[in-house]
Image (cartoon, rainbow, N blue to C red; front, side, top):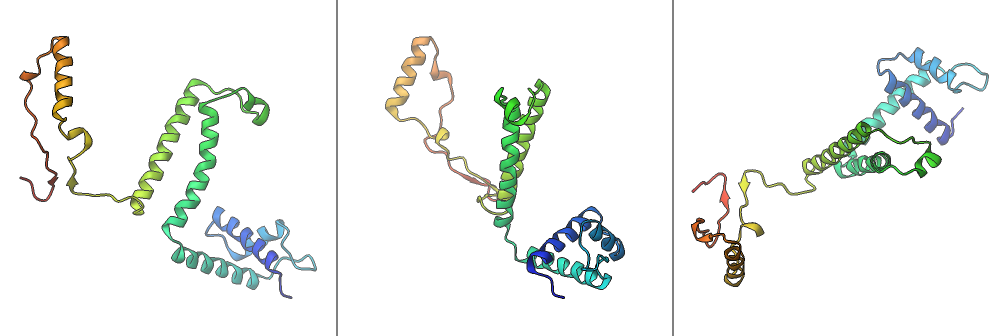
Length: 193
């Protein structure tokens, strides 16, 4: 008798759960685990071992095909969705409000628990950023040093005069400081000057 799509899907999920707990489990052990979860024949007997073995191979094939076709951006999206739920709980620990006791039964955290939650939040954020950078979502320029930043450009003469006047009123002499070059050039790590 052919099983419905929904029943087969539930059976595959149960097999995945059993294999996740013990990947080296035998088909006979799977047969018993599935019977304890309510998967049995119409007569109440355990599922046939050949059918269970066939379903295990089907689950393995689907997993392998899914991994081949999955794109890193899709996987990161799933990870970020899980991360979003974790972050919400961590913020409840970090920024505790008395309403959380009534709503969620969450007791006020101790100081060390708050610090651990902040540390975990920071580590999760950095892990996601590193994964996104490794996936190529952000362009990373390895081997080059970009020195031409906003803070490295010299001030306009009018602005420099105003800053110099302010320092002079405070009694500081800027003429003793080394002069900056007019333009700072970007150095390529492979071609030092």
